[in-house]
Amino acid sequence: MIAKETEAEIVRLFHGKRWRIGTIAAQLGVHHTTVQRVLRQAGVEAKTVAPRRPAACNGRSGMLGGLGAELARVARKASPSFTTLGEC
Image (cartoon, rainbow, N blue to C red; front, side, top):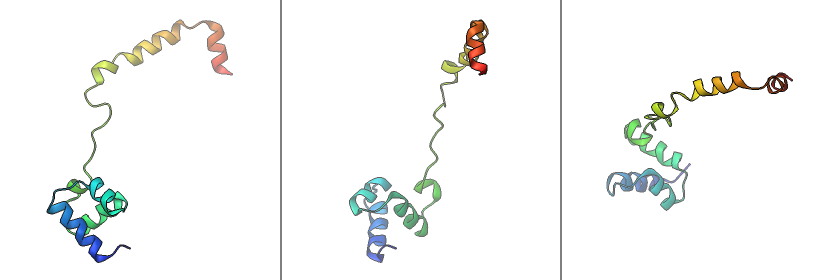
């Protein structure tokens, strides 16, 4: 449990100075999830407190699109000894 003064400071820094959650956590020496919890309890929207990160593959499907087919083609061309080793 953290002190009420620390909770008030978290809310002040977030709303008043517009600091990010990680910055507040580092400045006050608390974990970032503690800052998120305090802000949620203060009524800050969940999207603001912990926004969803975009998937790592967004916008890259064109680059990786043919990779699966290429790997399948290479596997079919593999020598018989290679495929037997894979079955062991």
